[in-house]
Length: 112
Length: 390
Image 1 (cartoon, rainbow over the protein chains, first blue to last red):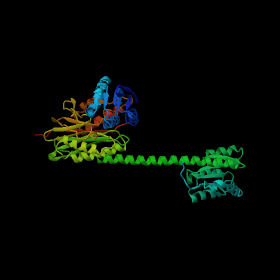
Image 2 (cartoon, helix red, strand yellow):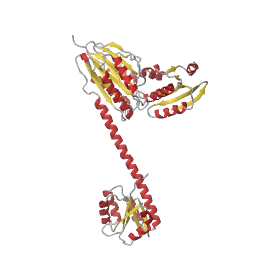
Image 3 (cartoon, each protein chain N blue to C red):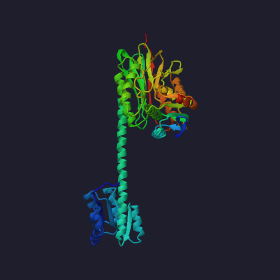
Image 4 (cartoon, rainbow over the protein chains, first blue to last red):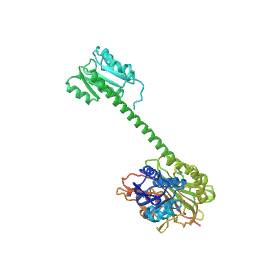
């Protein structure tokens, strides 16, 4: 699991790659907290290179979404592979988290 | 790390009476500071008696040649009093044969005669330091064992709340199985007898594992039992979700499929809160997954509606409810068992009753997985609708 953060326009773009499961969910949580702290920008989580995410990882994404929401910051996930898209659809989280097809589309929603 | 207040008790064993005042004199600073307390014995027999009588002696410093019982024999006997006592042997300079024997019999270290008291003190301190570390390791191990015991009790409690006697009746057959992974997990199933002979069927999976997941599972399980009295599966889920979300501080969630089954008509009305869609197996062996109902996993957000869908089972139909521990079980090559294999197994077992069909799935899964350790709970609940004979 690896997290890379860059600023693009008025957004923080966090690129996530590798696998997130119970063994590294806590580490993933810390990485997201560190990446989003000291900023009031909206956040795009780019999952293009995410290979697998377990429910423990989904929990981290939900917690992040909630905490950003409570400080009025936007949160968008983008570029999900089909199996990962399925996980979001089955769990119903696609209804409470903004999911976009590509990073460009995600950034476009941040402008609005 | 050593928090002990009491002085370290050191038993000096030597048949030379002059040694006693010498030790007390040379070690007086450590004795005064409360670091050492010395005891003395004149031979191995006396030493063993003292070790037994005092009970908490930390280490022994022993000469080799003594009447009645020599130091090498004493070394062999010490573990029978307490295997955690450490011993230093005092030998003649260059007496490698005896030193070798002493070390082989478990002496921690040795010093040579004539005794250099600075060296003796360094050796004693080193031994005590080792003892302190050794004890903290033992303590940590004991704590770990006790935590593991508590966890295994937690797993037992979890398993024991799940129903083993499932509702039975004319026209249907139910069977359930749960194989918990080694760590306490958060899967559960339930079968709840409702009014008019209907049966509530549930399967659920809490995010993550461990003690928090187990507690969340118990809360979800209890809430579902309480809310199952509501005649509508969607409103049952809504109720469970609202209460769970209200009390959820850890940000956990549970995916849950809940259905109300009517054995008279064969209708199955269900709401799916983020759970893997159950497989519907027809009598002809074809399979399909029950369409999602757009429900979100429970515990995430309150005030959500849970829509229901309804299907009419035909006699011979089987509904297979499962958690992701089945399709996501991996073999030695990191391949997942997957939905395709699951459906193939179900098709092959289409003529079996609920019990045998469940066994077929678990057997095929086991054959696929081989020796690869199980990471997730493996839980399933099978409903076979036979229909009432008119």
